[in-house]
Length: 168
Ligand code: FEO
Image (cartoon, rainbow, N blue to C red; front, side, top):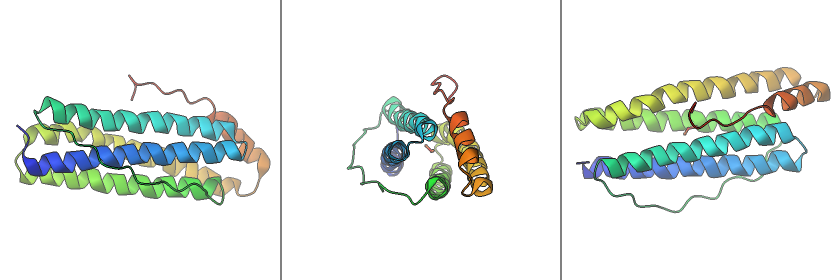
């Protein structure tokens, strides 16, 4: 049985993951509005991935005999100054999510909830991967600066992303 303190924290994380999905959907719309379909496609992958993260937390709470209670999802930003501005915002957001996951691990350890701690390890690794991927795109956008051909090449590359739920 899940302790109330952990149940509350895991419910908060469901909301954080749903907000991430909503934020990335807003970014997908921003990229569509500036005719960068490849970037928009990459964001769609993020939208689906975050939704899957939220559902992983949801299923875990239920599996542990806890109760999921859904809260309002905050309104995301709608505009960014440039693709670089948007990707810097993604990186900052993912760093924030990493700190939330780390706080959850600390709580699971202090509450001696080993099952939750083990469950969270997947997210610890996932955040390393997320920050590395997004950080790599930020670096490339910094190199590209205002070069349209560089931007279109990156757009073509990002158009190839296919969300694979099994690959996570
Ligand atoms: Fe669910 Fe991108 O962290």
